[in-house]
Image (cartoon, rainbow, N blue to C red; front, side, top):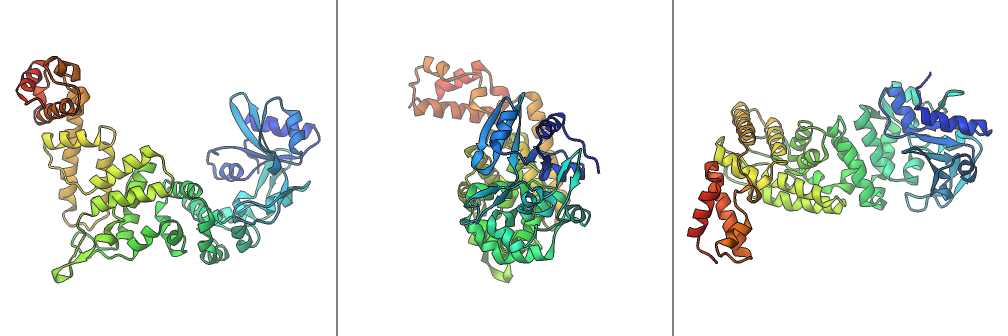
Length: 444
């Protein structure tokens, strides 16, 4: 098998070879190249020690010398070059107590998580596959290198990574690996929220976000996302639904584009339903205020997973709005866009569409037609350039102060009242009309 290595990767390997050292591209970049996917980055493993690597290249960064890693800088690109190593005992489910450098590539590959990630390649040697990674790729399966319990005991995050790789690659998980995951899933409690977030995010934006179900079946979400487990156990005895809250969530995840904000919104949009579910006459379920509760829950989950403030803001707003049904009228759409913002309103439309499609077909076409009309009206509003925010009014705070208004809350309130009039009728957004109207608004 012959793989195409980027020129700079080939240069680093040849430079190391020329100095008498072995060197290979290794891990995920080899896996992705075999699959015809574009690798996110290229890692290189070598028999050279870190200081020997540093001597060979003009620009390097000491990324982790104690673990054998040096980053080589070539122009604006960077490549991690790591010495063959054997990991010592893992004491915290994440870090080895110490590492030992080795001269044998096979010993380095033996410490890696899955067989599909334990292959190395160089033009001179070709593919080095000591653990049947190619066979597992042909069988479309994720399998641990060696004993699964040992690999997961070394780093518990590998438990979640197994499901993530299955979702990204369209693979299944080999049975012994599955059983070890089921047994050791509780050890994910040792892993930091940041590392959990990264893996969950990659799973959700993968081509198969519905593999979250597998994470649930294997006991993973019970540790990292217990709210989802409660949703999987919560029925929805209502005309619009035919499955549990969790199953509806899994269906909805597939129906939005693979963008983090959208996928997290669909994951979280109904997870407060177990908290508010009540059953009335005839066995019909009700979920009062699940949008507001859902917004609170979304913030709790995202904060727990250490998400950035902007992602939290966007997801919380979309969760709050996910069940809002807009009348296909220009004023209603303008007011909604004014509250959500131009950048979030198209995401709201995707969320609404996915939520409808993940429900029972009852009145589905009618709902989708109304939503399509709302989308058309939104496009017309943008094309006309209707005023949708205070900053787009034909007057500003200075203009109102010239009328005698004092700086403070009253000024802002007056601008909001003017915006309310303009949202009702965009023709009112003229300087003359707004100044005349502002004179008639009581000054506070």
